[in-house]
Image 1 (cartoon, rainbow, N blue to C red):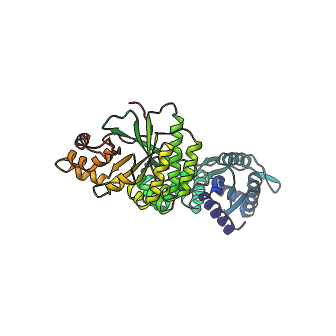
Image 2 (image 1 turned 45 degrees about the vertical axis):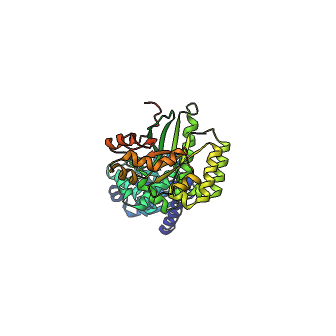
Image 3 (image 1 turned 120 degrees about the vertical axis):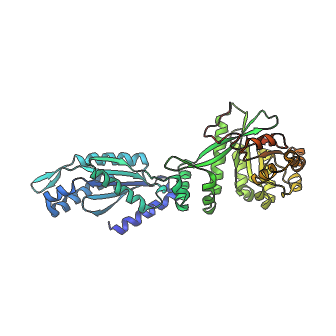
Length: 414
């Protein structure tokens, strides 16, 4: 196979990772024959060419017909193995390593034994490109060979939080790979009730783990997701994950989860129909799930927001609208968009805490809403004095790092 054909095939297969058919894409296996200089001096170039061709035949026989070979130079070959699971890919690499290291290669009247250095790598969007992935498996095998050889290892992408944050493409690849493999993560932040509430409330927030192990907060990857049209996918993942968590703790009805949602459920009637069908056929989560929308999204999709409120009421969900401030339309919230919870905008909280009468100002703003049964949340509480002042004001819940930093475990008991 020509170099050009192989590289095109690799690009095509790597690109399939972003599609449903890419769930079992395959991977690369790279073989470098150890002690190149000594073998060259012993066999000469004619012998090297013969040995190289024999090695390629063994690789092809071992890996099967669903592999493409790339032979960039003497004594090294890489195979693209398509449509195999990562575990099977690793098994094939191990068998190939054993075969090459125990194979007799005929050479004139004698035969030659070799050792090889081998790397194996499942196709992974976090490499950013097919070319970068190919480069990494070659560099890995060459490094093993220079260190003495006769080893094989798996190659994994390395991407730090800083690298991802500074590069939208890397961030997008990391996000797509996490969604494809169901590896998005969540953390939980407590909402502290300022009034009596026997049910513990938590905000469930998405996190993206870089390959370095550090977690990226939503503000770092949601703008990239929005540009790529992936917000709806993240919404559905969060919704399904929340339902799964609640159903797994069906013996404990004493908690509720708030999850952020984009405007998709408000703008798309078919998406609401699918949600209604899912709730009807799924586990009983009544009273335990709160869908949290931006107030501006609700106002931009007024009919859809009213339909969403109706769907929630019929199916035992609750709704929160976020980023309410002193310029918001209170009458609209009372008359048409009467939600269960209203989260104040962080800017409003900051400005009110700088006033002389925080409790009075907040009571004047929120009293008409609370009189209609809407509970008010004050977010982003980072200061003890602010927390104390808000505790005495017209809010029902306090949320922020001063109350509790977000945690990876859902702790239902102190």
